[in-house]
Image (cartoon, rainbow, N blue to C red; front, side, top):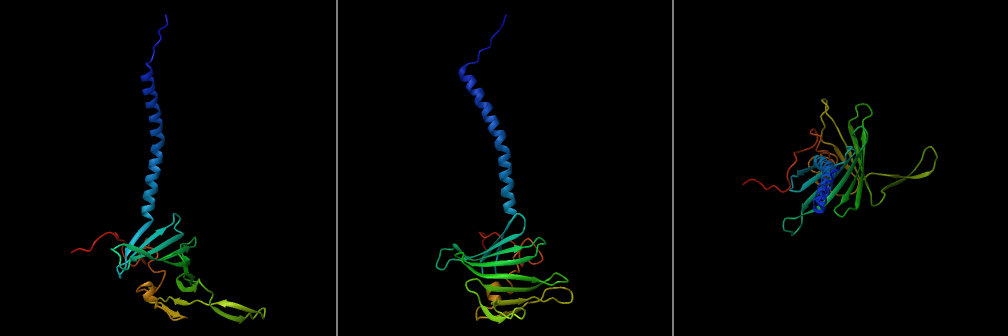
Length: 219
């Protein structure tokens, strides 16, 4: 004698629903974990620092540490405390972690300058930082001694030559400006260098501590 167990249609639907929900939950859990891990990783790759003039600088780095984006925000003129983007610098490093180039943008995203970095052949310390005008090529026409042909040689609008004392500590750089303009300290802060403080994850040259941009001074 065979016994047949019949399942009520509604009960079968509920059972199937539970199975589907269970499968969906098992599939969404890894996705949720991955999303949380991604959010945590992005948080680790962002730093915010307060500048002496009251503005804020936000740093973002790529997952491979090869690209750092530095955005400076200041209060809007006549605004109600809201901040606007003033300047963006995008740095690129080589596989050894040394800065090789940078592009300086204004608040609208227009590229203003290109920066090229040079290092000492023996000790590997940063010695040169040349800034070129990205809006127009500045320089002079010279005669190539090898080909005896006239060639245009681009010249930087600002040169920084970094110095070090006998203990290897970095001294204030020597700055040479071609056209009249802002002093390096006015443009980049008291250190006078566009690269200083470009990596807040490096405690040796970060130039400060990270902050919460929404925090208020203590009374």
